[in-house]
Image (tube, rainbow, N blue to C red; front, side):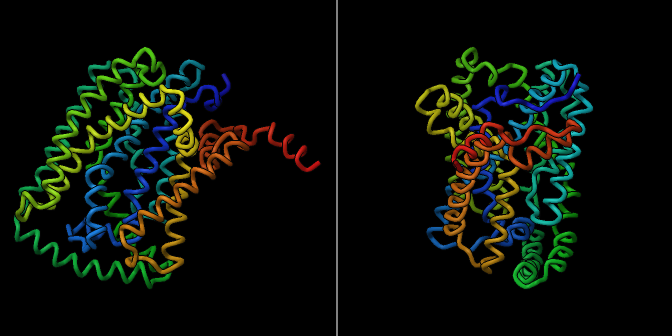
Length: 407
C-alpha cells in the first residue's frame, strides 16, 4: 500500500492549538538562554543578578512557565506517536520502519540545530528517546502507566539527591563557574563563528550528549502518558471523554495549588540554606506536572466551545507548523541578539517583549503560509523524507486565486 502523510481532514484541531500554545511557552523559557550565558549559570548553579522588575518576571516564569511546556510537548509527542503508528497500521504500511525513519530524520534536524545554532535543542532528545516508545506500542494500558509512574519516581528520586551535595563542593563549583561565565560571555560576544562553534562543541554539545541517558526518566513518562491518551482516544473523541477531561482538570488544578505555593515560598527564600538552588529547581519541576495537565485540559474544554475556537485558531496555525516555528525561533532570536550585540546586555523584560513580538509574527506567518501550502517547509521536508516520496505542498486553489487577482 502506498505510504502517505496525514491529510488536512485527519488533523486534530485541538492538538494543533495545544501545540501552538506550548510553542509559546517553550519560546518564553528559551529566550533567556538565547540572550544570556544561561548554560554556564545553570551548570554551576550561579545566581542571576536581576532588577526588581526582572525578579517579578522570573518568579512568574518559574511558577507558571518553566517546566510546564516541555512536558506538554513531550505528552503530545507520545500522543502523535500513537496516531502515526495507528494510521500507518490501518493503511497496511510498515509502521515500525516508517516511525524509525521519521525519528532518524528528526535526529538529523536536532543534531544540526544543537551543533550549529544552540545548546537548548530538544529534537535530538525526542528522537533518541522516541525509539523506546516503539517497545510500548503493543503493551497494555496498565503496563504503560506503570512504567510512566515508575520512571517519574526514579527521576525525582535522582533529582532529590542534589539536596545532599556538600555545601563546600557547591561553593567550589560556583567559584570555578564564575571564571567559566566570563569566558562564555567573551566567546559569545567577541569570537568568530568558527571559534564560537569550537567552544560550544567542547563546552556545551558534548556535555549535553553525554547526559542523554539521564534525561530518559524525565522525558519517557510524558511520552507514555501521551501514548495512553491516544489509546484512550481522549483527543480523537473529545465528546465521549469530556467527563474524564473535566476530572483531569479538577485534579490537576487542586494539585497545582499547593505545589505552586510551595514553589513560591522556596523561590522567595522562605526555605534558606546552601541547598536552596537545588530545592528551587525541584519544586519548579514538581509544579510543572500538574500545571501541564491543567493547561492542556483547560484548552480542551475551551476548544469545545465555538467562540473559543475562533480565538484559539491562531494557535492552531503555529502548532501545525511547530517544527518550522521552533527552528525559526532560534534563527530569528540569535540573528537579532548577535546582529545588534545584545548578548548579556538584554534584560529579562526586554527578552520577554522580543519573544512576544516574534511569536506574534510567527502566528501571522503561519496563517499566511498555510493558506498557500499544506505544510510548513520543515514539516514538508520531514514528511517527504519519511515516506520516501514527494508530498503535496502548494494548495492548488491559491494558484487560481492569484491569477484572478493579477487580471
